[in-house]
Amino acid sequence: MASASEETRVVAGRYRLRSVLGSGSMGTVWSAYDEFLHRPVAVKEILLPPGVTAGQADELRERTLREARAIAVLSHPNVITLHDVARQDGEPFVVMELLPSHSLAELIREHGPLSVQQAAAVGDAVAAALGAAHNAGITHRDVKPGNVLVADDGRIKLTDFGIARNVSDASMTRTGMTLGSPAYIAPEVASGKAVTPAADLWGLGATLFCAVEGHPPYDADGDPLETIGKVVKGEVPRPSPGPLAPLIAALMAKEPRDRMPLRQVRRQLYPILAKAPRVLFGPEMFAAAGSTREDASDTREISASPVVNETAEASGELAADPGPLPFAPSAATDALAAAPGPLPFGPPSPAKPGGTLSPAPGPLPFGPPPGRRTSVTVALVAVSIVLFLAAAFGGFVAARVIGAQPVAPPSRSDTSGPAAPQPTVFERRTGEASSVKGAENGTFTVDVPAEWTRFTSSQAGDDLPLSTLVQFVSADGSQMLAVNHFPQYYPGNDLDDYVKALERSRSGGEFRLVYQAKLAEQEGLTLMYRTIDRAPSGSVSRTTYAKVYRQSTSLWVVSVTVPTEQEETAKAALYDRILPTFSTSGS
Image 1 (cartoon, rainbow, N blue to C red):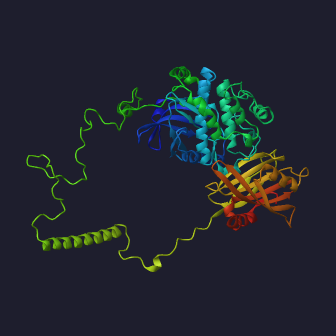
Image 2 (cartoon, rainbow, N blue to C red):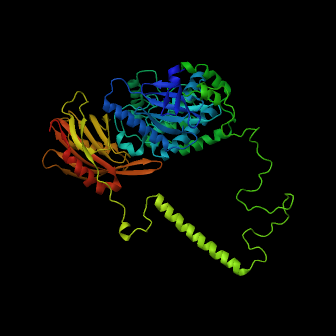
């Protein structure tokens, strides 16, 4: 439980932190209470690891915001809902739904393998959640039992999109970074290949493997690098024979294109769920799991949500009983009337003497009473029309005055078209691409749009030497400048090797080289190629302009990637503008 000082900590003036639900090297998840909307929430606090530079801290904050943007577009009953992104002292806090639940990892640890019906329910819920994510252009990339929450009322939700990336960020994922849990990571992700939604299919299969076998498909407690080696090069483990074994094997296919689609997964699970009992996870499972909750090391487990009533809110204590809902009427004071009575906006009904309703509605209230002369009626109607027009004009004048607008209509010269877009502001940026094997002369400078964010990582794969990749990405993720430095590339490789590696990295018509030309002033090439990123929601075509050239024993690649529909304007506005400003420390 949190200390007294922690219990009084309030984030963004409204989220009161109560107790720590889980923590890890990258952050802490708090049970909290929203004092504005009066509801329990989970608040994820991002922790900066010791020794990080200011630039690395900014990148971590940006990753947090990207995570929030990824989750915010999802609205699905099997996905944890994001409520808000708050800031406190410049640091971001992600505010999410607090689900009283236990992780699937905890339930398996306490009770062993699930029944076929229980595993099918988990598979169906996670498949539905992933389908919603993929339709929104999001790949989770860390599907595992620790990120599947099971509530005692039967709800099953997928959580922790902390390393999720939008499809628009696909160009940022082909790195050597180990993202996800080694025991559940897809082989192509572990080897640094392109990440697609098919990686989540593998994670779903590995999660179901653990559900029916009681242990992960690979050794999660051993050396992570050794585990990744088994994932990439070893045989795929097969579950014991059973109703779910063929489905798990179809999801854990080594080749991403061979994995079973999510819709087919749900179709195959339906016959099992149709025969399942209504209550699959009995209360005895959660009682046993709750007895060891304080000792659980899974940083993504979420405990029961705090409940606050009016007395507890004033004292800062959690209430044992939530009491009536804040919007429910009190039986003593707000009981519903036996009859609603007349509608407030309907015409009143004439009443007989004594207060009883007359059997007939009588004449309409706006009709002339009997006996009135026609000339009088016409005069009254004329006066009413004049008064109405005067009131309308007066209202128009008042609205224009209040809005500080001229009363007279705008002249023809005021009805011009929309203003021209503001020109892109560039700024001089410095990047460091010398982190591979102590390579030197990797510092560079280049002009980049001011609002673009920098990311740095190592990259391996495609039969090329290890390299350092520095990327500058637009705010919406659709445009990118990439600087790739291959130290010690020569004499073991040449320019053709790089072009062939590009072609091998994309298969099935997803890469098309539009043109290639040799540089006149130095050993190198200019390239233009198009790539296609496929997702369940549709395909995204991108165009890349690149300069590939030799500098001593290094190979440098400077490229600009944009959506294909922008390729004509982006070449002049971005590539031709940026490339002449690029220079390295060895130039």
